[in-house]
Amino acid sequence: MTSLKQLTLPPAMQHRRYRVFWLGILVSTLGSKMQFWALLWHVRTLTDQPIVLGAIGLTRLLPILGFSLLGGLLADRHDRRKILFFTQLVQTLVAVCLGLLTLLGELQIWHIYLLLTIESVAVAFDNPARQSLTPNLVPKTDLTSAFGMGSIASNFGAIVGPAISGFLIAGVGLQWVYWINAFSFTALIGALAVIGPVRQQQELQPTIKQNTAIGEGFKFTFSHPIIVSTMLLDFFATLFSSANRLLPFIAIDVLGVGAVAYGWLSAAQSIGAVGVALFLSQKTNLRSQGWIVMISVTFFGLATVLLGLSRSFIMAMIALILIGAADSVSTIIRNTIRQLQTPDTIRGRMIGINQIFFVGGPELGEVEAGLVAQLWGTPVAIVSGGIACVIAVLGIGLRWPQLVRYDGGQSETVETRPVIAPIP
Image (tube, rainbow, N blue to C red; front, side, top):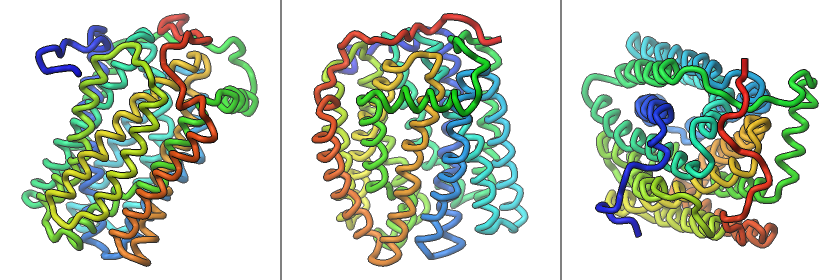
């Protein structure tokens, strides 16, 4: 185990441009997490129907399905840094609109659906560019560390952001959450300006037709069992165990707590995630990765069952912390496996395809959880989802035993050097 005295500067943070990039992500994520949980609370104040919150998943999923493949292709063929400039600007404008409509007292459910759809289109292009940029900033030996630090940035924002949003909701009003989020995007925009041009490996045939190029991405991705199995594991686990948008109902209807306590419930998963991410950020060449992923997702499902059975604030907090810890381990290692298995020339397309599973699972899961909660109640929706998650892990392990055996120490057959040739 890594003690506090043994903690040193993570390997990924020894690279200046990654440090700058990471700090920008840290601040931007803080604002985004504030807005996400505040928006769920906002919707709960406008309606008492769980299905309305569940339907938010569709507003996020459909743009991902429609644009992820194109987003992945653009991340391979164009400057990933410039793509991020544009996507961050779009998300800034969405946050400003939410703030203005809230201030004027005009925000309605359909406004939220429309603005989230626009934001999700931007995210469909943002994620492939952002994730495929990371291996261009650090060597492959430090990639696990980089994704560990990325998880810390995301989960730090998810701890502090909801807590701050809870106080803002109870104090100065929801519109301030949206405006602070709009301002937070300037941190990542500024970081992208500071790090300057980033070299990335070019396609050997950049003039190939769009459909054929996307087809190459599918062919590569689905011809690698390790990549396919990690994608499906992520999809089915989050399909069954995603119930984040039911937290307002857990807080109000099951636990009987207010906005401030809801803020801490929203942050609980990330409290657990930060601890394990800090541990993994110290690691290079982590072994037994497949086995660790399978165990962590199983634990994720069991902790979800515990959350559904919780009837006290403390027990719900503990369950959510355990969920976050397990999910963080799984996410970091799965990202590392996929990135190391994929050459830079096709990395954006692989991430674009994976994004359909990564986003599709939880978003469809939120719809499924909303429907079950509508019919049989919130606790039943959560407990049944956790059980189904454990069953899905068992099925995937039996179908793809090579994932269980994956060690992480095998020599890679693809070239993953971070600097090859510049994208003009």
